[in-house]
Length: 477
Image (tube, rainbow, N blue to C red; front, side, top):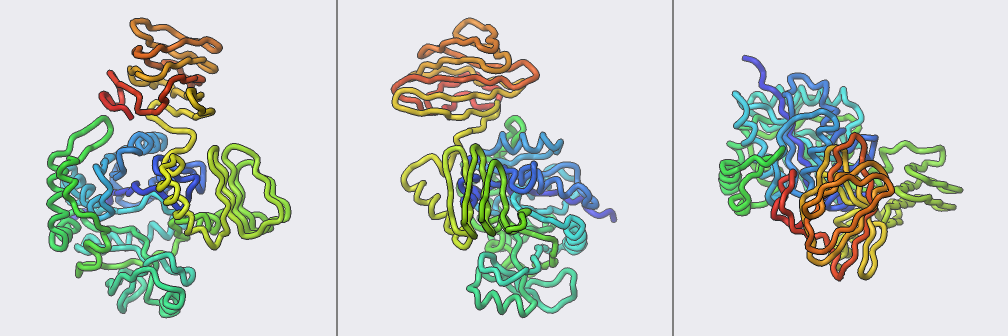
């Protein structure tokens, strides 16, 4: 019998709050180029290229806010697949169930699902592919296989997998263990029977759903109902939000892996990191002779063992050791490497204060391009719009603000009321209140526009959309 195809399932939810200010809720770490010129999502998909018996395409599970960015990142690396939009975040067990149900809908036989978070680093691809082959052979027999990372030290930030007696290949899982204290972690590492929990899996789609039905039947029922009522939307698949809202929230470990008698583990020693903090990124980054890892426009004098990152301006550091300094257009983080796990507390405080910095960068991405808020003051706001080639903004109007547009690069096609005309470099137009308007770029190069907004309210929700090629008609966000 021919072996089933291996279908990658990429879990691309999450916000990566410990990597703030680079990672934001609306532009999280899986979409950032943290370790190369590609995003973490692109790296995750790209490292599978030489995997044996790999299916053509992937399934990506992400949330509504990231859908256009995820689609763009896949298009940039010429990867086709299904993008499932979680109506609400319900942790990994339901997300994988949605993917498994979709896989069975579109396959003649039950494929092997290779479930991977979108934001991990694996340095040794050959070792990774060998481990996938071992896991696939075991999963074909009806087992649920996870990858256990060979520990590089007594890490207290990871959960652990305890295995029973066995060889170097697939071994029965004895227990999943929560994040330990340092003394316990040291005992785990010295004992040789505990591995870091990677959150990566291989199993047949039908076997996973059967086990989910045994141990979390309400979850499976909600996922089945949501997928039965799913509708296509452009490049996306939308499970039914109302039925999915009844789905319990739980991780695959708690919902299935800790309860099933089919859990197996394959050890993986391949330079793995979940890049869960700035300290973790420092550990896997290239460093100079003084142990410093830098990116962007930086100058370091007398510094040691530090990570310094600049996005938009010169960052200079003098005489500091073991620090993390991260600059973005709107925020600067300074932390000791030993306290990087506490960055999430800063994000929690910002959220509690209702600030935008946890959610948005100053440059905000849209399906048509992006805008950068250059100046924001009482009664006016200045933005730089970048409209991609072939992109068209929605036909819209505003109730509470006027807009002035100056084209500084490219040629824009403008709809203003009943008129349509072109604006060239150094030409401008004015958009009055309550006037339908739209910008389009029919050229081959991006169009750059300086937009000056004036009014008593400048929020992004002051939008009435009439037409939109991205399916956002009738929305105001």
